[in-house]
Image (cartoon, rainbow, N blue to C red; front, side, top):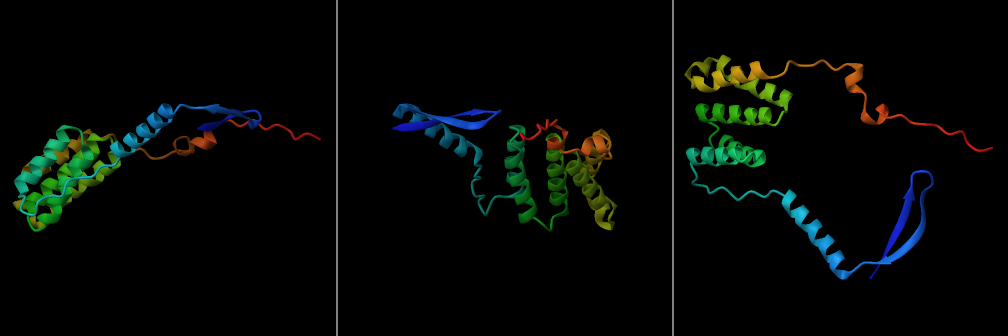
Length: 172
């Protein structure tokens, strides 16, 4: 099996062609590594049994969260929201936990929006009947979040524009 190698230089681009032989084992190893990498990045969650109750969903979400498996935790909290949309106590818990996951990941603006949505539920007329735990925790997390930073010219420059480019005059 022949594999073509090209030499690349920044000055002149791709030039020259070399042909080398790669062992079948090396090619197989590279293929196996790429397949394993692809499989490890694809997250497929098991179907949730129809009879799984809210306590079990919360337990599964907490187990995933304890392992820093944020996608898994979100999966179970979103399932809680979908399966128990008419239970205000479960809804507020899931909302808080989803916002807290954003906080744990450093997604400050998403966390801030989620925590404010939790507090908005408490400001509504039915908010007085909700468990106060999530309100207290949401207020504490909001207080810990970095202050919102207004973008300036220095923070909004795209990375590509920030690099230096040297222009070479065209040959005559």
